[in-house]
Length: 304
Image 1 (cartoon, rainbow, N blue to C red):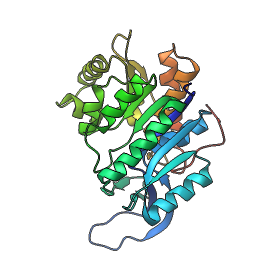
Image 2: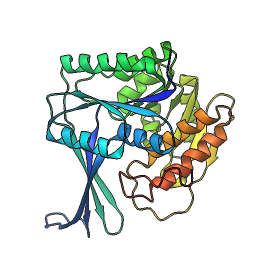
Image 3: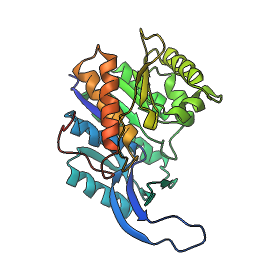
């Protein structure tokens, strides 16, 4: 019997590191005035915010090396359910440099690289977990070593097993995963243009591309637009639904789109027939995430 929770597949998790600096000056010493470290990567962020929304979620992720051990310890401290698959390579550490004016620079390593045997072990764990979950979220950059069709294969397998599939990635893995017709995909504006294969210079162009993407998946497309809010389109929607983001003092933007996605999923689970309510919930929580210290969530369900 299929469970009712969410399986979050994070092939390329990380420890996120934030360095605070007054300013970032080339060819000069830049003093780091503060450092924070927390479990990160898109899939981890989605699972964290799903838990905050009251949704039972379980991560499956590869981990290796000292950074992997740090990641696992952080997940345990944060109460995020997970199943770690050991790998030989070192889990990456993403660095976010935040200046006093609030500008953020993001530096993402390209390792680790999984070999064929490690991928087989990872997929065996996914096979074991799949029957226990009603939803499957394929989230984040595809780990190196995995074939570009990895997400498409798993989206297809999950759909055939009766699960509801959500995909949030970019590039070639996203283009291929679209062919598996997931229930919902969440590109940002850059990723939408990347999928469309053409510049999207005006809202009319972006709306057309979002509608084309919805036609390709026969499902829902959630377009995150940063400070402008988000759009949602899909079956029975003429154009796009629009919700603007509230005016707020932004502390951090890392993981805001993942919080939006988690809240949207939670809203679908609560009320599967009200897409505007899904979008409102997603934008509200995505905006809430920008006011938090990175890697943290507010008191349970406050404002949700």
